[in-house]
Image 1 (cartoon, helix red, strand yellow):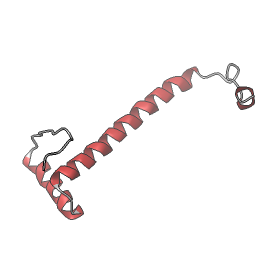
Image 2 (image 1 turned 90 degrees about the vertical axis):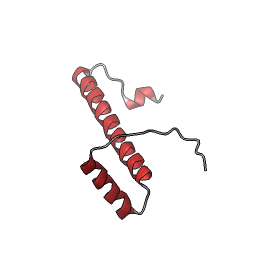
Image 3 (image 1 turned 120 degrees about the horizontal axis):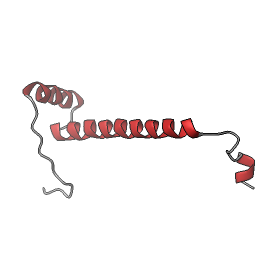
Image 4 (image 1 turned 45 degrees about the vertical axis):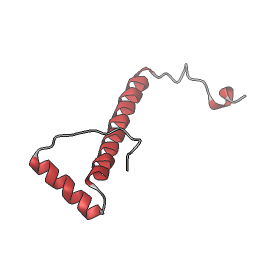
Length: 75
């Protein structure tokens, strides 16, 4: 059955392949689905780190004197 989703070929070291294979087997999912789920989790982590860094930069320049109050914004 053909799929509409793009495919990705990945070369893994034998030890990494074995761990991934065991995780997939224990979860009762295919190797491909386990790899997809782990990649999604990793991308979520990268996104979180990006926004943390972005917030830290903005926090350094934040001024309570220049900030608008909730009341002023929602008039």
